[in-house]
Image 1 (cartoon, rainbow over the protein chains, first blue to last red):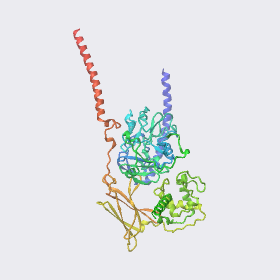
Image 2 (image 1 turned 120 degrees about the vertical axis):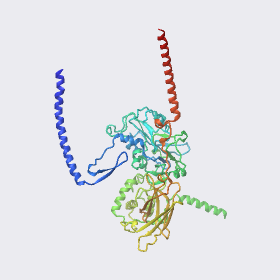
Image 3 (image 1 turned 135 degrees about the vertical axis):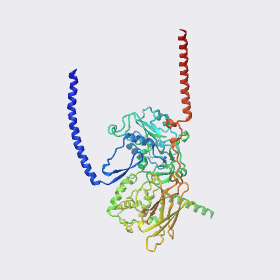
Image 4 (image 1 turned 90 degrees about the vertical axis):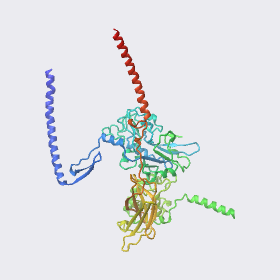
Length: 312
Length: 298
């Protein structure tokens, strides 16, 4: 018994010395770094920088002491739940302009680390009757103001923000898929298999607003590119459309901006003049995505353009 | 006679419908010319822009690999395309039509002229007509502006004066005003030209939301003869209505957080729980009574 007790003790002493050596080396290099840092600082002394803290205070720092800071997951969660104050995001999709270029889909998939068969947004081929020509209809999440998916979530994983979007917290999601069943627009998908590049991104801090890295066994959905909106940029799908299909903007400001032409127009005028409608409005879910009718269709669409998901 | 008139009207209608298919460019825009010579540097820049923004629909010039869309995107190397004047091309690129997007907000005037310089390399007979202007001297250095805003009738009056010795009024200057929105600039009223006294008046909408007190950030932009645009004033006026927004999460709803659940739900749920709990407690109390009675008799 005594032997057993001594063995680990001896080892730990050796380990201790080893650690001491490492600590010593680290200390020396640290001191050197400090010394050179001091030298550098001396050169730049007197220069001060103003910074905005997380809790919205402006503080002053000396320039040399600054270090770039990587956002921690906790902060990403807090800001992801709060949203952008005073905004109310809406999207307008002009069906007359969609040519099924599918650039919105690929941009979205690459931003959110989705496989080619997983869609946050998809363009469907629609034909209202046998006698009318078909048209393409991009279908993202409708970000309803009365979202049934949020109502049914048992763990508060999916939630509505003050600025409009319905987001997902994959750290809370238990994969029950109630929300998928509740959504009448089929806007949600489930990770049945390992997400794309799961190994590559596994150490990346989870960003609620971008929903990456994606997690196996959880639900994922369109986020209105909440991370881009914070940076004053249009969503991935909107800015990548080559045909000017998407308008995106703030309903409170009564203005939407076209992703292709970057032209800003008044939301109320655009909706009124083009007889805009929303999908399945009768359900009373108050979708935030408006559609402009597919006017000016010419004949049937070329066969080659049709994708697999025909809703004829 | 009547029949003839009718026929004439019919023909003119038909002709109109045919011509409306054509892309008509206003006469004053047709004569627009580049402010510099199309040299190899501009052509190279133009090629870069072409490959980035135009190839996806128009294909590579002369290869015929354009997208099959209606209306068909024209091949820049084709005679039909090259028949356009520089001004027509500039207008068409900047304004767009049907499925051709407008590029006036995404490309600067110099980029569009570079593009035209590039596509003209596919036309051997092309001889450039241009009026070289010193591009270094900006428009703002030549003129000065004076802006007044009348709050009661929402009219914005602008006067443009030349910065010369006599301070003469600048006539025929093209101006447009924009209001700042989150993703871009919203044009208010139409693009207008100054009159002989250098005046131009814009009417602002009555119902445009501003910030919390109704302030609007308004920019005045000037466009020169070559389509070059420059900001000459960027000011804040109390021209909008105060923004009204209600926080979605303040309302009680099924989808809201627990503390914001509908009252009926909270009442029904807590009522049911309380009832069940009190029944259980009542049973326990009765059981205790029975036990008490039993033990006292023993």
